[in-house]
Length: 370
Ligand code: GAL
Image (cartoon, rainbow, N blue to C red; front, side, top):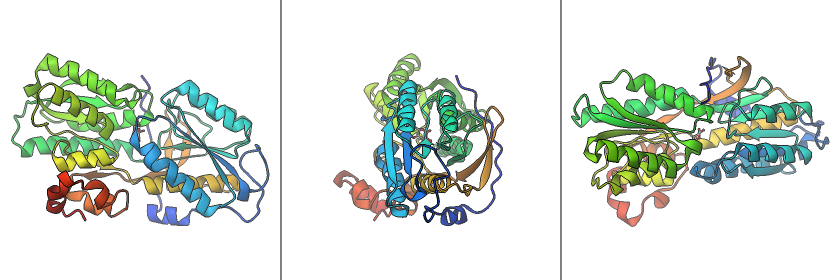
C-alpha cells in the first residue's frame, strides 16, 4: 500500500487569476519542452495519459475538455491520447510510445503514483516535461502538478455523512462501512486520511474498510456484499464511498441484500448516474470537482511548458519523497440535492434535461433544477 503523500500547500493567487493568467502557445518560439519532435511550440505534440476506463470522468470530462482547450489555444498542436485501462505497466508502455513519437510534454494521470516515477525519469532524460495530472506522482522530476485539495474531499464526504446521520437521529454508535479508493492512487490515500480525520472523531463505528483496487465498482460491490452478509443489512446505517462509481456498486450490493431504503452514502465526481441517484434518494451526496478548470489548467500548463515558459501556479506541493512541485490546487465542493442547480448545472457539466429523466421530474422541480 502506497504511503500517503504529505503535502505542504502554499496557496498564492486566487485560482480565477491563475486560470485567467495562463497563456497559450507562444508566437513561433522554439519548443522549450521536449526535445522529441523539436520544432515550434505552435505545433507542439502533447501526450495525455489517463489511468482507467471504469471511472466516468476521464472519458466524459477530462479528455474532451483538455483536447478542446489545446485546440482552442493552439490550433496546430496535436494531442496524443491513451488510457491505461487500470494497468501500470500498460501506462508505462503508452508513455514510452509517446516519447518515441516525439511528444513535447506529457500530461500524466498515473494509475500507480509510485510506479509512474520511472515514466518521469524517462521523459526527463529526453528533456520532456511531465505534468502530474490530478494524482501526484512520487518523483522529484515533475515540472508541475494540478489537482484539488484532496484531503478536503475526504473531509467534506465524511462530514456530510456524519451530519446526515445525526440529522436522521441514527444511534450514536451505529455502524458504517468505509469504501476507499485505489491503493495505487495517491489521491485515494488523501481522501481516506481526510475522511478518517472526521470519522475517527465521530461516535459511529466503522464495521469494515476496504481499499478498492483500481477503483473498480464491481470489486467495491463484491466486498460490500460480503460485509453486508456478515454484519446484517439492517446494521449498515451509513456508508462512506470514496466516489460515485464505487457508491453505485455498494448500493447494488445493499439492494441485492434486500435493502429497500439505502442509508446515507457519499460519493465523488458528480457523475450523471451519481446526481440522478441523489435526486432519486439512494445516494446522499457527491463531491463536485470542477473538471473544466482542472483540464483547462493542465492544457495551459502544457502549452506554457512546450513554449519553454515557467508554469503559472498557485501553490507548492511536496511529494512523499520531499520534492517541491509547482502546483495548481483547486477547491472541491460538497453537493447534495439542494446544490445541484447552483454547481454542476450552473457550470454546464450537465444540463437539466440530461439529469432530469421523466422519473426524476418531480425531484427536479422540488430542487429547482432547470
Ligand atoms: C481519483 C480522482 C477522482 C476519481 C478517482 C477514480 O484520483 O481524483 O476524481 O475519479 O480517481 O478513478
